[in-house]
Length: 98
Image (cartoon, rainbow, N blue to C red):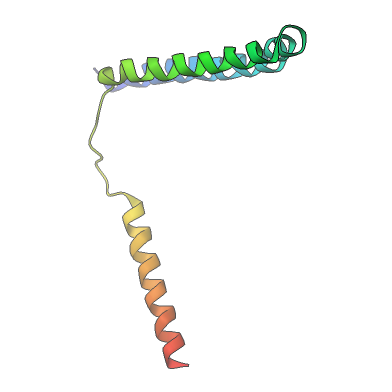
């Protein structure tokens, strides 16, 4: 897959992702609330719960199709941890000297 095609596919994915998030928000504040008020609170709760379960199952079913790429750069978290440890050591030395 070329870099250009990969970028186009990512752009398309995030466009659909953004659309789905906004459409879901719209449904949540209109349809689900209406169902909870007019029909049953339990059914109004069960619909989003079922949708979340379906989303998790879809994610798990498709995870074998994902492209796994090893990172090319070191994680900054390791540097942050070393910096934190060094600051902690310096603070201990300052306390011991005072």
